Length: 165
Length: 88
Image 1 (tube, each protein chain N blue to C red):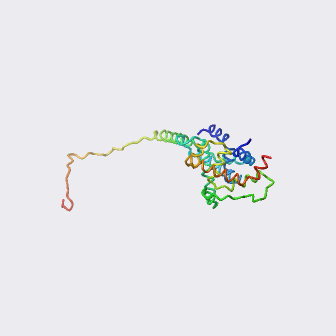
Image 2: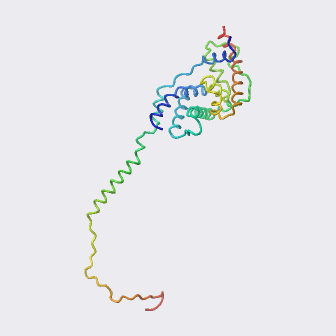
Image 3: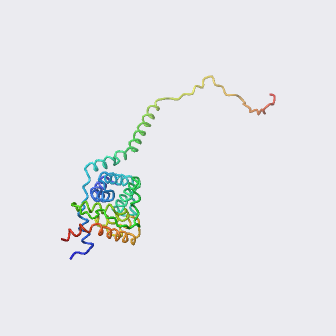
């Protein structure tokens, strides 16, 4: 890859990839480490054009590095998307900071649901591309997204009521 | 009338991610392999070729001589095969 091509790719994706990593890990310094490692992998020849588009490759790399971070920090139990107990991070207390409420509600999602939700709602990627990124069937992606939305609706009802007033 | 998905989407968008710092750019560019390494094998080849050429030039001034004064070939040289342990 030429310097020019690398610069172009880095300029195009550094912010969206950082946002994605930040929303998966909840930490800006960790997200920067992950984006750094992702691009180091890219210029060491990790990308194979015949396998996926560059965008799919980069998002998948961020997703895998974030999962590695979760494993290394002993948060792998967050991965499970079967347990569907509705946590209410807000309790009955309505936070003054809606943004903070949303952050906490999204971070309370199991990782498999969170990554699908972030890719769809924040990065606005199509479902078939999300399926490639998370290496899952399309039906599984739809199911995870549905469960994530249900949980968020229940967790964010106070905030949603505030929005519609 | 806003649907439930649209309503949720609007609430989710309230959570904004920060921007990456300029430090990230520095780290990525610092980690990127420098292109000069690409030319290292070429440079090594050129240095080797120059070295060989210089050696060749310097060694071409040496003249190899064979001194044959006093050499007399053996007349009617015959080959005798002697077996191990056999008395001559």
